[in-house]
Structures are given as structure tokens and as C-alpha cells.
Image (cartoon, rainbow, N blue to C red; front, side, top):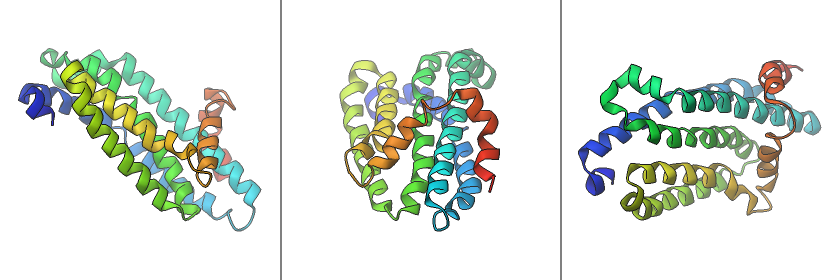
Length: 203
């Protein structure tokens, strides 16, 4: 879509941004795949403990990813310069917008495990479809106005909807929306990162 609307050069700049953003996407996936099976074992044994552990699961992933996103945001110029050179400096502003999509992506990865545990995967599918449609629509609306910045804004907003906000619409999925929201305000970020692994894995 970017190539057709803006040209190959703009597509190249946007591709650089996407590659950098996706370079940390594996982190929430690894954390989820390694930690959640242990948490899931508690579901049949102790529902209260399961809820506490999954809350800490959200805490840890959210704040670890927030730390990485903030670092990339503030050091975006150095990252672009080191990896691609000064000819891609135009990508700096785009990266500073686009990188926030990975924060919502990580929330979606974390909450996706809850959908799986509750056998509600169909809602995750619905949310992803809605997010994709919103992304396409916003691209058509914003790219002619903002250029590739518009594409980045579209991506961030679509991830916000599909990975977080849409869960508040349905009564069945509202608990995960509430838990994700609460995970940002319950503890300080330093405490979450420091105690994340031990609290999740402790029996």
C-alpha cells in the first residue's frame, strides 16, 4: 500500500522501521511460551493463585517491554545511524511512533494466553480481524495526509484496539481488559521487573 501511494523510497524507509520494531517482538513470545505453562497448571488447583500469577505475568511483560520501547524511542537516532547510516535519518521520527505498537503487541501476546486458558480464542480472532480492517482503513485515510507517519499511527492504533481496548466491549473478555489495565498501576516498574520471574514461578 505504501509503495503504491508514496513510492519505493518511502516503502524502504518504512521497512527499516518495521525491521527494528520486530527485532524485539520475540521477547514477549519467549516469555509467554516459557512461563505460562507453569501458571496454567494452577488453574485447576487454585483459581485465586492462578489469578495472582497471571496478573504478575502481565506486570512483568508489560514493564519489560515498556523499558525496551522507551530505550528505542530515546536512542532511535543512534540505532538508525548504527544499523543503516545517515541516509535513513528520515526513519527516526517514524520509528519513534511505530515502536509503541510493540508495546500493545506484547500485551496481546500476554493476554492471548488468558484467552487460551479460558477457551475464548474466537474473541482473539475477532479482535485481530477488526484490528486489521481498522489498520487498512486508517492507512487509506492517513497516508495521503501524513505520509509514512500515517502508516505508523495506523499500526499503533490498530494494535491498541486489537490487543487491548476491544476486550472491554464484551462481558466475557472484560476481565482480561481489567487485569491488563490494572497491571500498569499496581506496582512500580522497578519492582515488577525485579520480582517478575521469581513471583511467577514460585509455587
